[in-house]
Image (tube, rainbow, N blue to C red; front, side):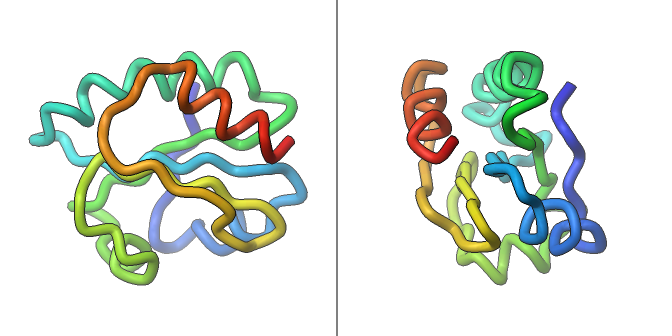
Length: 105
């Protein structure tokens, strides 16, 4: 299951992680987000021991989204050693997300 990031746990769970992190910025009303959501859950299940894969609801946690300039959703950030190393804006197939995550393992 994908980790649930929030404004209050983001620094500790994403930025301080010793594993690569993939964060899906989404909202319930977003159609493309609903397409990407199950893919993020699959990736979380497959990479749970190698990476932290999670979701951040931008309606409930606007501060992190604002800090990272997330203006369109879904936006997926890839974080390594506390730094954003890649970004995907918009819905893409699972293979595209896995390729980006694998590049940072």
